[in-house]
Length: 401
Image 1 (cartoon, rainbow, N blue to C red):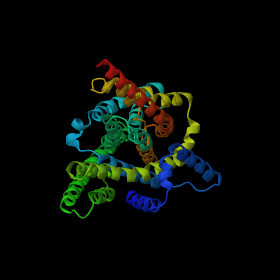
Image 2 (cartoon, rainbow, N blue to C red):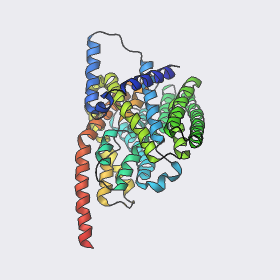
Image 3 (tube, rainbow, N blue to C red):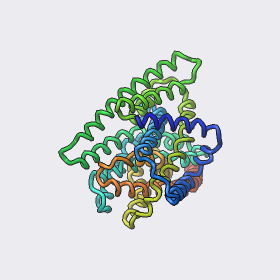
């Protein structure tokens, strides 16, 4: 019930803000939005105001995550994904799981405050990405079409397929917190995921069929209706709302006859509103925890968003047909934890049964912050350097022929 009310509140707030220029300006400056959230948190605490209820904060974050997962899933036509965008498929099916495993192993070895379940959950949190600002650094340039497609589709696929994995891992970490013999949290998470997928899949299919027969309405209107209905119904029925919304977007994306521009427009609308709110909420809620970070946590956070992230991605692209400079660029560009990671982390705020809950929040918050700042500082220089390298490589190939 709390999630349903939080989703309706967030929807009303976004509709009000959509009439202003605030979301557009905030989406271009995620680091400043996080800093503003941290400052607002310190001011709020300094005034001695009462603490906000964590269940409402977590539910609001879960509603925002559901919107991101829905918009990302709606971009994908599963039956053609591997054929139409092989680089994104490699990064999603191979690079993301490999990063999760490497990140979890390094966290377990390097951070004594984290046990194996919490280290695995940390890897799942950081596996999610969703930084729209770094994609625009490439999609708005004369980069090769395969690179633009890979950058555009990779984050959508990892969010759409990675969020259910992260939710199940969170259920596993909660089960371990409740005792090794007590697997009810994992069972509940699995049943909620199955029920949510069935509910959302049915809503997405009906929306796709209705949009085909009704040419007067935009297919995006039916898609949004399916996503919102799935989220609210799953929340009221006790199913997983994030997976329900993602399933609605995934099935709609597979069955719809909508043009690619309709899918992109739907994603832009959600990404213009949800990530800025996510970054501000992240700064307010988890920003002060950065003061509790130690040296090992800082080293891990920096490694997680650089070498741990780029290594698996480059390994998965080695056998692709992309030129070497494109492989290196895609390995370093993208894949950093962003709005989806921040929202998923905030949604765990009131789940104290997770193993090493407080330590997990601190380390993950530091890594998300490093990912956002790192992506913001390096995305445009990396894109410009890649364009120069591509032009030089094209000239060399012309002279060689």
